[in-house]
Length: 240
Image (cartoon, rainbow, N blue to C red; front, side):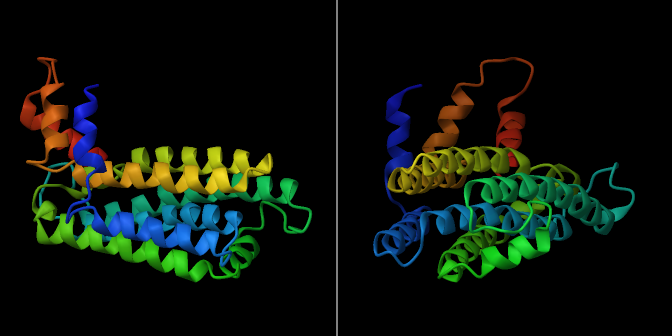
């Protein structure tokens, strides 16, 4: 990979300013000891739910039609809610079981999801980070999906599994940070989590028509099996 293509990703512009500001805000909260490392990690873990809720609205607001969507967008939104909800529930059980094992003060079983989420939401100052995460996602939803007309280009069917790539990458980073905390490296865990998450979010925002990063990806599409236009569409769907 040409390292020069990373420069647009690292350069602050009007598309990415809110991402850098929110990351800086969370770092500030942590180093001022307003929030703990585990609070930061579970705040970003909860972003999975925020992304899922927003994707439901994306499906409902999509305007592109496909023959396979015979049952309508409400059915697709309901089906997405079920399979995504199951994914989040299973993922939550693993996360809370890890917390139950690693933290002697955490008395709830990993399978008691309601009790565990209630305790997570009661963590000191978690509302500040969650508020930042929600505002960030709503801003990207408005700007990229509504204002830029993305809802006219994508169908509800295409959005059914769109968040999973982003979620898998994000949760891998969260789990990796959790291992750092297990070994007592809390500062390293928070810096790693916020740093990698910031880079991923910037990369997602920059996967748009006309951006240097998108053009770089298109040029790397050397296969004859898919046209540049289809490749653009595929990459944009993965970045939802």
